[in-house]
Length: 614
Ligand code: AGP
Image 1: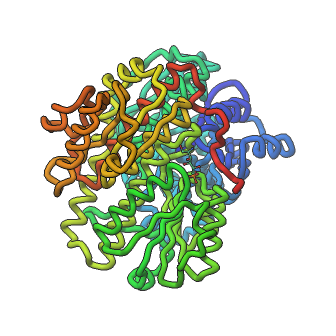
Image 2 (image 1 turned 30 degrees about the vertical axis):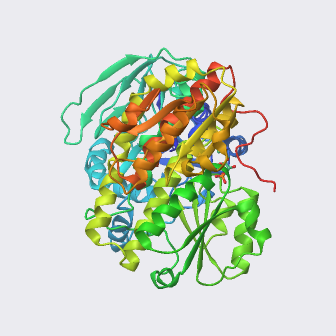
């Protein structure tokens, strides 16, 4: 997820674009850059790091005035966050500049085509491929708008492209597919941006763009077409958010925004990781297939919510790949003198990629000759750099301290890893793997369904705002979700909350049950072994002792519903994938209850987004 701004009009485009990028910095802050068409060529400045670095570079070496400009603040997906990979990217002839948000899945084949044409991309990014395709098109005599219509259909994946042509200095051209782009309509000036936060300081009149549309702006005109040049539907609207709300997509808190971004985050994490037949393609893994076949033990290392994602991974990896999988708290791992060696695959899960406990643990593992694969959301982070291989979760920046989309995309990455290992080792047939991949592809819709159906959770949060203690129960993959639900409540509402394995209740925790004590119970899908029956009997045990049972169960589960004081229905999904839908109501509940208590859910007390001390 990156921030993009384009401008045409009488103001200094560099000032307008950089100010807009500042308001989009929450969308990505690995690097930033700006480009203007001037004197028949592209002039650009781009720097790794925060936008302040770009501003310092511009102060030292100002760009010339121009009638148009584009800019970008990056959240790296392909290519480390260094100057060379920063956007804008410029064509070899210096004529076209391009910024991009999203992922071009077929960048490798397009790169091969360009190299065969004698074009030598210089960066590690998928974006640069698109700028060379545009330059090759306009060199044939067509304008940038026509070139955009030719190039966009060749790109597979999700993208917002915004470009300028030095031979047409008063124009900006953009295209979008599965990635946000909005037009700002001013008086004698126009904007394109990832979201309205970039331009509502100048105008509140906007135009929403549809899928596969191309928009061409000048200071005085806006032209919207679809890819074959036919006029596109124009959907104008008035923006009534203030700037703060605009940065949060209209939500009150980044955490709530990020909970609602989860369908898109899942879709982006799946992008480019399997082929049309459902075969896994994890080309970012730099551990050879041969080495992975020899792995005899997997040790997942993580902290907090990431540890709970690792617990889910254990069930999936062992079920699909039949490899023994342990899950260890990073802070405990190296102090227990672990037995690891060359045939151990250590999987480090970390949203920030900077957690000191996890970093020290993987250093210890590597010193014992283990191979390390990390699952990270932050490209170029320390843990990613010190791993043998990385699976990036493409959740985009997670601003809220409490992890939501970061956690959900970790689950997706863990499922992809488990399926990849099963595919590699032949422990699952291709059709079985493809069936799970197909279900994963349906998860954005399933999660959206849970998000849309949040009325029960919102009412429950109002009722329980004064609760002093809330318990969470789950079994199998529901157990880590119970732990995660409890953690969300602890870290956001500062309420005592505890998660238990449902089967452990009778071994002590049931003594906690008293009249009206709220207990959330994650009920597995029906039909899977004895899991469902046993959890239902756990619910009966606590109801008999007066508990208020908040039951999360799949739709069409009358048995679970019969024992619910409050029923939260989940979409029907397979047992191992149920965490993807079961955790969402618990996130919404914790966020709603904490905000009702007046807490700042984006910056909970005593917590940091990245714990870089042991
Ligand atoms: C998540 O809600 C917490 N803020 C915390 O437990 C977090 O998951 C943990 O600190 C690990 O962070 P990491 O994923 O960045 O390594």
